Figure 1 (spheres, one colour):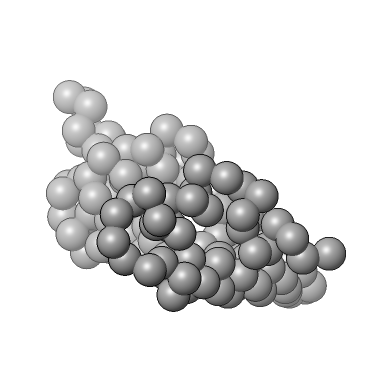
Figure 2 (cartoon, rainbow, N blue to C red):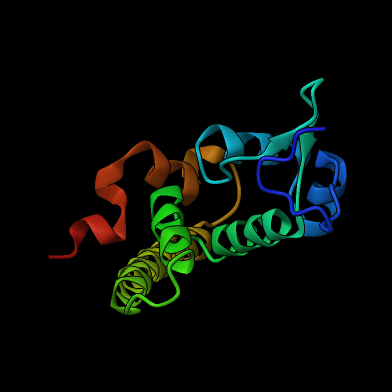
Length: 150
């Protein structure tokens, strides 16, 4: 067995076990490795991947960052920052603040979208599709309420 970064006392985990422990699918583990988020995975002579506890923690970090909505480039930067624990946290803070602003913008867009859909549903008289406000608004963007706002 080769062990690129596994200490002698560290357990060598299969990809399936690393995936299970981190909550990431096996295909996703392979993807993260292929794009460099999970570099230097040890392999046996036959090419079987071997994961350490550190690798599992890294996978869990990535999974949690994805669940929080961070994109791959931001996660790559956050991982680099996590790998350098003595660096100032201002870069991580800036990434999180930028992400928060993006979330706030999406929430605003979702509230406007909800209001538009609610208005369509509330204005729909029932009956046939000929009088259906939902169909009318979807077919004619000019009929949207938010389209008329300044």
